[in-house]
Length: 428
Image (tube, rainbow, N blue to C red; front, side, top):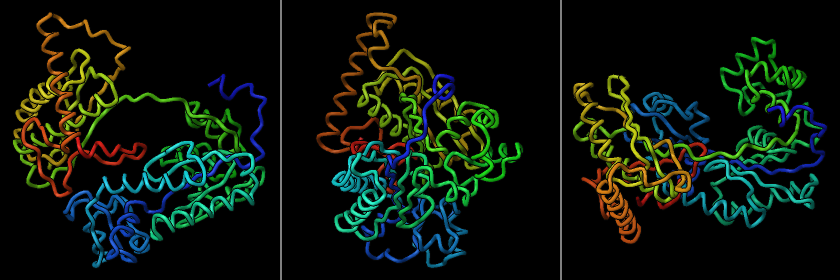
């Protein structure tokens, strides 16, 4: 990191450079907007219809009663007997995401999509004064209210860099608007707790406390070198600079894994029946691999049983993107898993394609024999044909094995914290 933060003569910007918006209780808000009978009621979004699961989102009415993300549903129902538990509809959340972000772009271009419900927008020169930036924020809020719906609200932060703008959105919810003006925001930050800052979780807070740093003001006043030492890496130094308003760009990332996981409905928990779920997740992952024009060298299967045991294994192969090479590996590992777990009932199944490469990074003449090469080419062509048929006639038109029917109506595709799935994934 020496070339990034050391020996710098730069100064933090003295203007508002970024607008960050964060959609409030996004999944629950979308459900309340889409389903009028849920409005103004405590709502928990759940992955399955069982009291043993936990809430993956909660409406503000539910939050007021102590129900939050991660709360077990049986505990939530004790807090609120009238709680409305709603099965997550990830496809609807992606559709609303696209509509909402299109509305925001009617007012300002989105520079960086950070998650399904967050984005950062670079302010233009004529938008960087507090008056103009606040007026822009109000136009965005009005646009969402008029063109999306009054139950979809957002908090907006304005600040010199993305980190501070995101921090500002967390300072006032729901429907907040907070500005951290350059060179004049220390007092606002000093009112926060260390764990209010994005990037300071339990472990980092403990390290800070052990180093005598107990408040945001203490953190502000240490040196960047000291922050690096506390974190144990250059990440601490980067955090210090961003806290002080400097713009430190993120390093470009490369897609490293493609995977799916599923908490199994009760009827799919016997290992023989769970195989159809694992097979379907695997084929979906392979379809994504081809859509991204990537090849994988490794496939990993991991299992969590109902008695909380964990099992995992992987297989390596020549670089591939076809269904059949990977599903053969799945079949072999599944038999091994059943033997080693004595066919225990399963709670969760996860699959992952990793060790990914673009076509330019590999040579496809590594196959051992001409016969194997021809078979591989046929498998790729057949896999591509399946993709085309499913895209044209709808997901699951052509499958390997039986497509499992679940309470949510689709399998595998979920919204991760930093990844917004394409709508096509719900049809793969």
